[in-house]
Image (cartoon, rainbow, N blue to C red; front, side, top):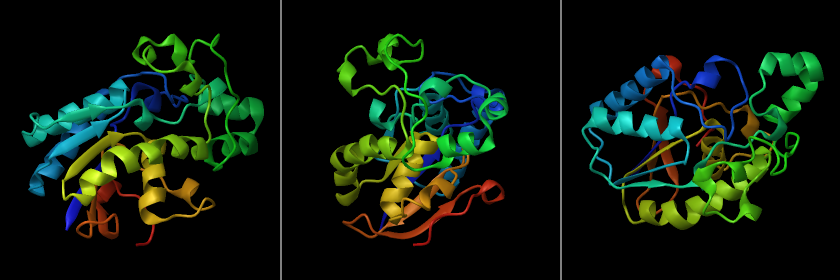
Amino acid sequence: MTKLALCRHGQSEWNLQNRFTGWVDVDLTEKGVAEARLGGELLAAQGIRFDAAFTSFQTRAIRTLWLGLEAMDQCYIPVTKDWHLNERHYGGLSGLNKQETRDKHGDEQVHIWRRSFDVPPPIVGPEHKYHPSNDPRYAGIDPAKLPGGESLQMTLDRVIPYFDIMISPQIIAGKTLLISAHGNSLRALLKHLFHVSDDDIPGFEVPTGNPLVIDLADGTLNVTAAKYLDESRAKPLPPI
């Protein structure tokens, strides 16, 4: 049996402010730091020793990983950062207060932008301050590959190929891995690993700072068991 742990970053500053974040780089709140440390402590209590870890290019996920590894006394393991694990890009909604956006556009439209599978938010171009071409961390990436807004489907279309090429071969080889990422990039992985339909996947929420430990049959990606370690903050999981 092989284990894979998925952890959404702890509460961020814009989570607290109820703003659309996406690819905007914001830090953790004090609560988010505490969640990240607790996540590491919960993993340590399970006695899990990781071979390697993966995270995004975004500070909130990177710091969550650092804090968790520190709590586990596993800071020495190899860590790979890659933009393909970034959060969904919220395009023209980036930075906006969610309630103010509902007041302006209506609950139904905002629900479609947030929870539909294939409807993207308003797309922004390179002139927009939150387009990734204006962020130095993406300077070495082909601008044509950088999104100006994404649906969940578009997010999945970048997350899953990266997972299949860079991560799944290590799982199949028997390595125990940790992925620290974001609500929507982890939702994409849930869809992939649990074979969730397009219609159902928007309904699954990944809680902040609460590790999800997945057991996989040796040499495969077949899920045999899965649980959130902090049961008091667990969310429903897809059936196995």
